Length: 349
Ligand code: ATP
Image (cartoon, rainbow, N blue to C red; front, side, top):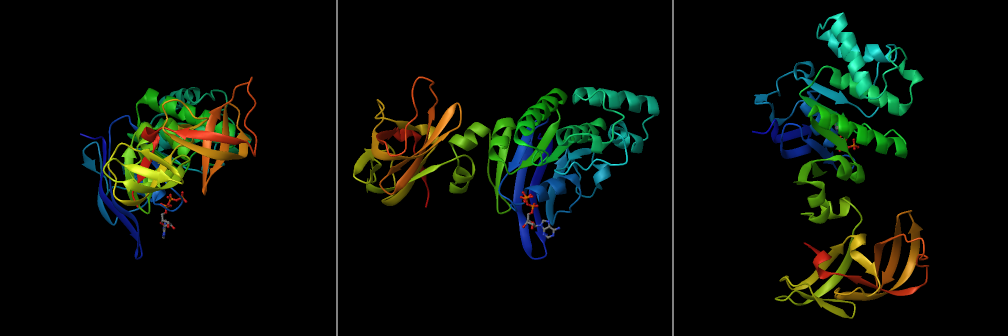
């Protein structure tokens, strides 16, 4: 049985339903991200699990027990917020010890646990500092240590990295994941950053308008999005309009080019979609959709070069790997681009 089970969860503020029939089952030790645009209800779901918000209907079951009627302090949950939320008048050590003190844990054990937690987050020597003497990244690590010190059953992270600069964000997310794995703690992580969700999650819940649109492993969400929203929200997507000219064989016309997708389609117009890495420069062997294009913007990103290629009324993003001995394409170059039909998703209308 799932360790954390959310069933038919709903939340309305006034007459607005912001979480709708939300179901989720999380195994013990899983790292799950709630991903979605601003206002889609991610934080509201998290706050209901934490007990800061009461569901309009639905159940939240942790380790077999419905916790909806329990206060936050009775739920055995650790939470880290976006803003560091450390107690400014307490030292790092006192912050980490705070929950232990409330639980009535004796001084010696408290101190041992604080040392253990600070060592775990890589800040063993900062116990007597105050929050204002720490960097943002250090403060968030202390917040994590404080949340974990009480050995919660579930860890809730509400955009804990979004106030940090890019480099720290990446290193801290790796550290959070390492600690989470080491402790085997069941974790629910809220983010609107798709790269962040893809990089650290066991599974992702993509939310839109209060609804869980798709739940799946990062590979699945990225490569097999089940709705147009998921396809467009997660990663960059090229959209190509096509006319179906032979539904049975799935033959479509794009501009003046015809190809068979090898799967039946409904008659009419379809939108085909593909990722930038599925588009190759040149008429690659074995690829049957070849289009003439003109290079537009070229963004040199380091390992990868992101190129815009205009073909007919469509602008395609394509990724090509940097090779030190080959200069990147330049704006205005006339090229061919090719896409394997197998890499084309057909999006429903
Ligand atoms: P963000 O990434 O911007 O934090 P989110 O996906 O976490 O967005 P929520 O904070 O869960 O979204 O909010 C979902 C919706 O519910 C929003 O439209 C928000 O304005 C609304 N909302 C949240 N809390 C309240 C509240 N206490 N009273 C009224 N409306 C609220």
